[in-house]
Image (cartoon, rainbow, N blue to C red; front, top):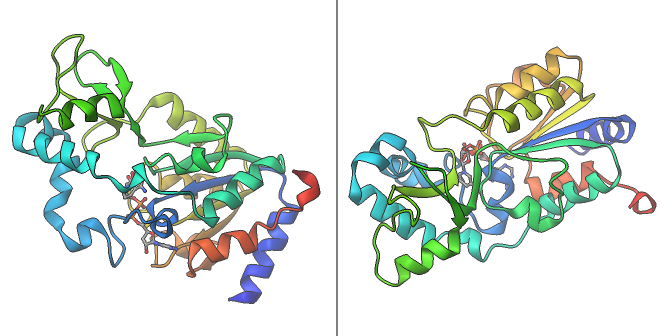
Length: 255
Ligand code: NAD
């Protein structure tokens, strides 16, 4: 694998327009479990998937009550960025990162220093709360304070509607502007790097094929096989926190 990392490091050094897609696997080393990895939330408890199904959320108060408790105890509130997040923030400072699309909702790319200029949070963020009726947004901690004070399912202060995290549940659409920006960057890049994702959630996973079709080199770093491995120029199955910093060695003088 060292030889492949060296090849990819050379491609990274030559690339002028790099696009990155990350998934839950980049945050497992920060203590946030993924969904489908060997220790994933859904691997251990398939019923947990109901908490991120929009129909179940809207129709079942018990699902909402459980979802609020999950948000309150989410590891994102104490997690720190890992070496993979930091390596990508360094890559942006090299001036060649044109987009960092993430499926993660944990805020760790931002915490590592990635700017809003390149960050595309495809599935939203757990740091904010949104009313499903009127769209009014508040910081998540404001709503969690209400849960701690005894409200099992705090409703919107503006319209009384049902609220949930500003994240995309199964059955909801992605933000069109964010998605379009991700597809444009995938079409414009000369190197596309996907890391820590099972690449099974659409439309995010399609970005790999879009970039490849547009002529970019495709590199996948993931502990398990993905459906896009067969079209990739390189597939690395090591730990992302070790592989990414090695492959993205950014010369410090460019910072
Ligand atoms: P996924 O759970 O489907 O896949 C994660 C992949 O990462 C797995 O294939 C696993 O083998 C790999 N992986 C885990 N740890 C790794 C490591 N240290 N090094 C290399 N690979 C590693 O996650 P996904 O593809 O992102 O899609 C699932 C959905 O999960 C997304 O919609 C996302 O919003 C949501 N999610 C987000 C978080 C988060 O924000 N941190 C956590 C769980 C789920």
